Image 1 (cartoon, rainbow, N blue to C red):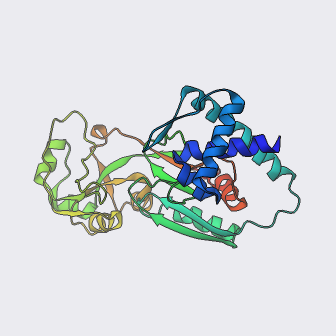
Image 2 (image 1 turned 60 degrees about the horizontal axis):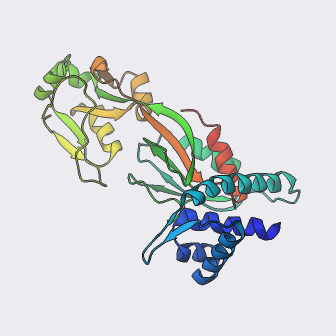
Image 3 (image 1 turned 90 degrees about the vertical axis):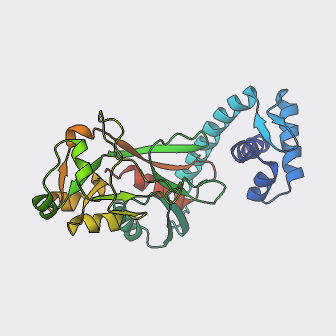
Length: 291
């Protein structure tokens, strides 16, 4: 029984990493040892689990089916072990988390997690790109947009909307645009993606293609918030990043009927086999967060 569970664990590692070498490195054994374990499993089951070539491997339909079932089995075993373990220490060690760079909206929650688990060393990596959680050694990631990934678990944390905003002082001096076309007469603060190098388009609906003017371009959200608060132009910003300025009247939203859009926030992490206590603590905590 234990040998079968170990074989399924090896299979899942190979299936997720798509590499005998990477799976061997993750499990501390040679690639040839991994290959032999997979071959024995295929012989025992009487099916081919992987299509192999000189450069890559991919799952067969039978392999895809076994991957789904194996993950559930290993998840159940891991949950049982966690429940039955009476000698578990407080979660500790390094926890590496990738975060979307949308201002400091996660900081209060992460601070509470840090207070609750002081023995966990948080390593926070702000990056716009979608990091490879498994290959790059991350324990979890919080991303905006689509959370779909067959190798990862996902939890929908909430949604946000991008708003077109400016300070009351700016609008007093330059007027309030009531149609998207009137933005052509204003100073606009834009965002350039450090990942793609492209200027992010504004979510304007039903107004054709507008070539919006530029007063400033940067790849940092806090700079755009600061410029907008200082009355230096109009910016397009996530509402969750500017809740306080909106609440205090320091920024005024406009063109709401022309910017109907919503973006999801997901927490992502590898499937639950071999989770550490610190990973489980973070996953349980993040499921309780509501944006």
